Image (tube, rainbow, N blue to C red; front, side, top):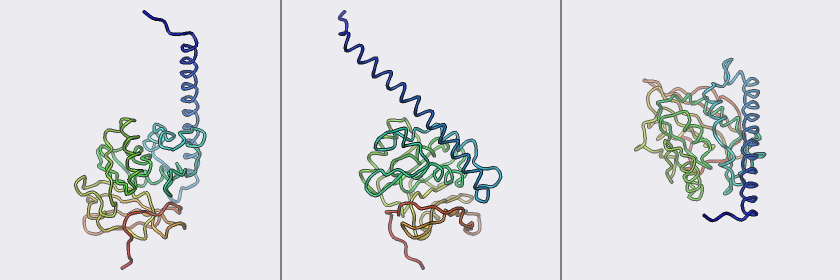
Length: 247
């Protein structure tokens, strides 16, 4: 049996130790991110109520390796509470906005969820921890391909990625208990409402691109669509789904 050269063994040990140290740093940064989100939630009682963010949502945020959905894969920058550019004019939303939108969607363990605007795949991964099945649509080919690979590599087997125009939703994958639209639109696309189950909720930022938008929750009761008052202000990337004209 051949023995490995000493320098190669030393090099392999050094690489392993570096990986362990990076993993430990990521865990610390992720834990700090969750605590920052908790603090923000306490200061947004008017939006979230006294109950704040659920432990299920916070656990999903703490379990998801955000740095693996960023171009640089840097723990020091990935877990800061700010958006991160991912190229092609798109970003991953800041962690608190991701947690807030997820909370407002009220995802249950047996739910089927639609996400419009996959981006890096990070929001889909969060939803994947909470729902039985996640269907996510991305209109930019490079992002769809990269996100699908990241989600597959991380074994998010309950998340399905499709390249396409999210305006029309994904009827074959629905109907949906919840729909999360991650990019800003002028108003809610009617096809998404049609694919929402009775009792379902749609969460999306509504307003002009590159300005302050309002996170809006649309509920679908048995008799009519009820739109709740805007939940919070935010500034997200414009959606690349089809433009919507006011009626």
